[in-house]
Length: 484
Ligand SMILES: [Zn+2]
Image 1 (cartoon, rainbow, N blue to C red):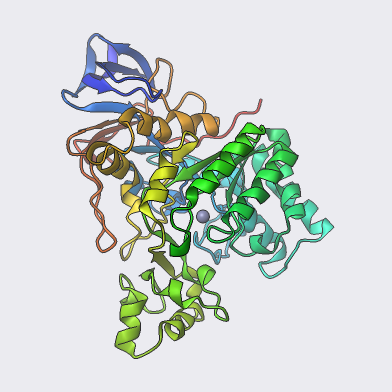
Image 2 (image 1 turned 90 degrees about the horizontal axis):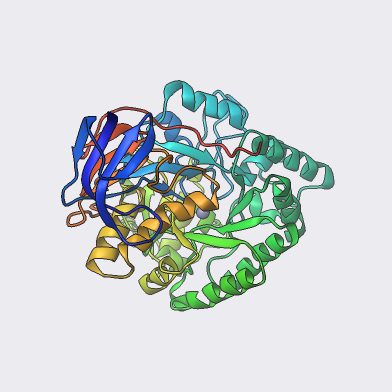
């Protein structure tokens, strides 16, 4: 007698192969059998529904959400069962208790190390599984502050020691954010040392590269050369080209990545399925060098200094205030809590994004930044259903099996999350059951909403979403890389 059976589903097993009809039996948190299976204590009827491995968000910023809102509805309700955190150079650890980190994560907790952070998550439970990189910006800021430019020899050694400590605790690798402070002040030589710190562990370097606009190709060349020199696998985060005058040119970057791969560089990348980016306003617009053309594409989504600006375009606010867009932007990025002001910028061409999304080396990552108030970028709550509904079903951009593979087995293999990302006997029972005719993202840039069509989600065999409603069970596990 099985614990649970999903009966009569169209099974997409995550391998990218053709879907097939069958049942899925679950026992003790694992998949026991696929095909035609016997009786069970509980059943999910899945006639007309698709069952797939739970989605793995290849690029998440849920580091603090896992602690502040461990039910993580924004992800769970998309069918995401594992989040990969610690990206763009920022992680929840190492951390100095009592200090709030002045970055997009706003880390605030009682832990110091990765191990202690994971213990905290385990003590209160989490609804999804979680794994993390250690963020270079976080490490260097803690040891040397954010204003120091290039770290000296001594500082660099300390930074590498701290990164290795996190690797000993099972981190996936190191992430860098080379547009942020202090990463932007780090030379290629220092970057090479930092990345080399994870080489002996077989870790990955996940990077928000130095330039996603006019200097995109140089920025990719820098990180691929670092990989070539260190032998460390490279994950280019949220690959895109920004700026209207660069639209249509992403193919050049994809060619360059393909050539690096041909030279033996272990490189891959992740993509989110939207035409707008999002992040901290102050990073994009330094007060003494404000690009007014770019500022015209900005919508404010979180602003503690001027909450009534949330949800509005800078051009509209400027008109109302009788100010120039440049002066308004300067006012926002010099306000007391400017570091936590988030914005959306409509600066990506859809054709470029789809070109990246359908590339063989692409995986899907939301890059969503959790926020409780206001309207976050819709990628936070809609990424996975948007790919399956809008791009696979409605626009036929890529086959459903391929898209699911990019959300599951490809990501698990990349990050060495053993026993995840496929529906196979012996694998963890992370499963999503969705309605292929109705699955859709429903949030917009003006209003937040959970997606449609996600009917059931199992996390480690526990029924975490039932008939589209979260059950409140926190069956997630912390996934550390076992290097034993
Ligand atoms: Zn980033």
